[in-house]
Image 1 (cartoon, helix red, strand yellow):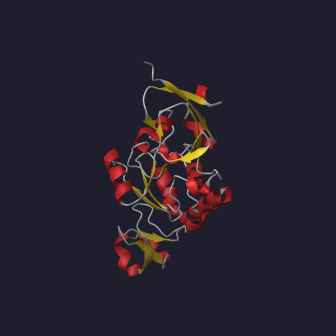
Image 2 (image 1 turned 45 degrees about the horizontal axis):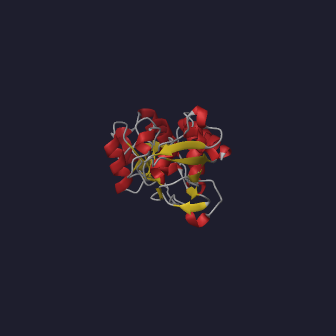
Image 3 (image 1 turned 90 degrees about the horizontal axis):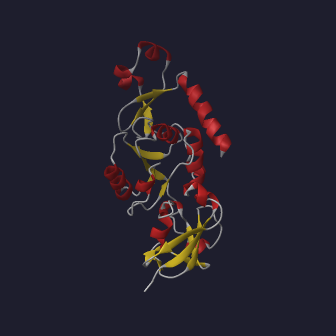
Length: 246
């Protein structure tokens, strides 16, 4: 007895980014031999579940656990879709993140804008997943299998490899424009900055810094000193470049 059946999947928006080149135009066909969750069927095409915000099976909204057991047409939509707002699959209001070790430049840009990002350049996959789950953080990674892990509730795969483009993608994806508060976080450790006296920071300061600057900030976590030196002009310009692209 042949129990094989065929399903047809249509990927909308930029989800075609994850498909094989030859599958990016038109519907994608899959032949199944047993009942499978729609999440597994979608991910078999290369699309991580955190990138999917709406699934329609024969026009009806379903969740990731829906069991596909016969021929069906599946529509898969990204975050930007305006259809069926009551049936969205991704959490709204996510504003804290954990990033994998290959995204160090992106992490610096996000922290520059005041976005809370946990990061260790040597963190392994288990540590990243543990942090995402424990602290309810969205996972930022270009490791597709990692993003597909079943414990990941929210996450994003930056399309571009350019940090400036990546940060624009993430701010748009998570609607973070109202969360942007530049120069409030430590670029090194993610701690919040607070005003500090020059006297308390003297051991960290170079002679010319001691001479020419009076106002300082100190990281509440690692103790690093910050001041409005000549480097601030470049950072302000960087922030302006980012905001102009939103």
